Length: 257
Ligand code: PLP
Image (cartoon, rainbow, N blue to C red; front, side, top):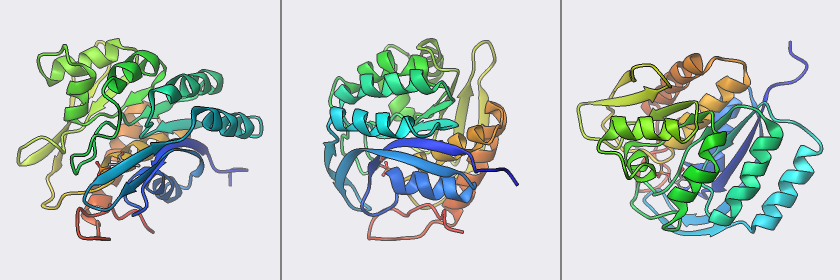
């Protein structure tokens, strides 16, 4: 038995219905036997259909929480979700530099229900400030296009985001049309890797958070990036097949034991 489980630090928003954000992160980490450390980046008003309001945490409070936490323990990987405010980005960048562990970033920009979750200039700021510090970036197709507005197509967006500094980009295709879900993996100097999954009939709330947390869990456990991507996608697909309804909108991935 290891002396302790791996630790993943999650910087994510709070979703009261428990589908996305920190609930998704910690349930996923627990399923992998990984302990979650956390700081809440934003409170939200939302249900299973859409997000009505995002209230970012004061950057000074976030910095104080992280300073206190990191003086006491060290994560083995970091997972970034909804960040909520441009002013939090330098605080988070400093923590990523200080910890020097694998970082998985789910660049949350808009809710599946359609609500904008971040200010207009946020995508450009995220790209400039955080992407050089990220190990695995997991945008959906719409987020990839917004993060790389200069790109003519999705492949060009994947390559542009690599150039911005992350080691691996995984563009998820759940928000694209088609009979299957095709996720596209990009690494420097290699052809894009296609991961093809059956498209399930329902729509989901919190799938992106679940996938990114599963990748972070596997990296914290020592997987290579390639193995982490494969294992995390398979586990997320299984959780979507077990999804259940909490409210009247989209279903929640089944992450419980
Ligand atoms: N709320 C929070 C706190 C989130 O982190 C996210 C996505 O990451 C959402 C809402 C939106 O999730 P979805 O688009 O899966 O509905």
